[in-house]
Length: 76
Ligand SMILES: [Zn+2]
Image (cartoon, rainbow, N blue to C red; front, side, top):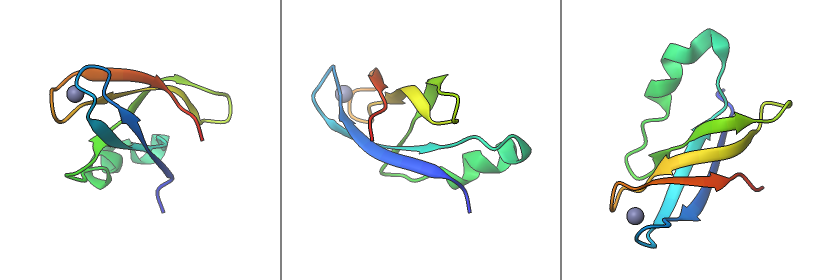
């Protein structure tokens, strides 16, 4: 099973709700993880800052409505 996080954030550009999915990278299966994150109605979030416990601290996700790249803090 692939560890993943999901959540939502609001686009800072157009206000659209962005549902995102973030897969905690597994160094052994980096190639597989792109395939498994392909969910058409969800943006694939990427971490630009990661905590020591491998949880993301700051994420980026692209808005599917306007293509703006949003940066936001990860909150549980
Ligand atoms: Zn947008």
